Image 1 (tube, chains in turn cyan, yellow):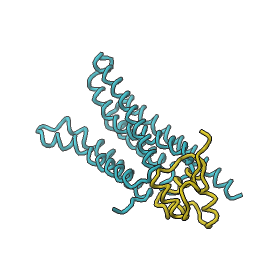
Image 2 (cartoon, one colour; image 1 turned 135 degrees about the vertical axis):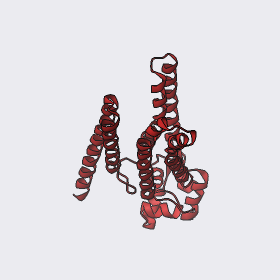
Image 3 (cartoon, chains in turn green, red; image 1 turned 120 degrees about the vertical axis):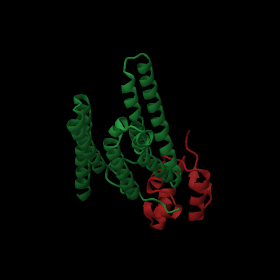
Length: 202
Length: 65
């Protein structure tokens, strides 16, 4: 099996994420209005295809990793499972107690996978730093500030879609908040990278 | 655990990337072993010893704890 380079992995993951966002925005709203079962199933389940592809890529990457990398993946996945478990438990209790409506609970479930991946990234980055690596010392793959920039663009698109299509102020606020947060992170990481390259030149 | 991997790599004039390629691991793993942040598994320790044509105990020594 050909070893997937970090750049190839990053590019494929971001392409899958873009497809996922597009499918969620374009197909998922149609699921409620479809009259027969087949189009309803298709439009509601099709967004899982890019996510399954990302999971397959992740599995391939872990399989091809060396022993230290596998340990870091394990730490990341363990921490992410714990976060998602707690998140789901809290969401479930709140839904049972009718603190949040059942419709909102279903929406919360849609966040399970993004939260899993986000917690995994944070925990894996922490583990990499623990073993002497760092988020700004990456020599391969897409630089971290560019990854955050792509996420910013994605959330800008989602926020614009929410503004023009659903007119849901809370959703627009949440998506704008995410976009701003990722933009700030991208800026900070880009500045750190620039400062490090400036010091390296001296 | 203490080790002489950095010293031995220097003697051979290899970069961390060169050693990583020879051992089929990542550069970060080589760096973590050299800095003592990660102790390699027995199979990897054997690969390192074989590469430098030395015994494992002459490269890796137990630390204080």
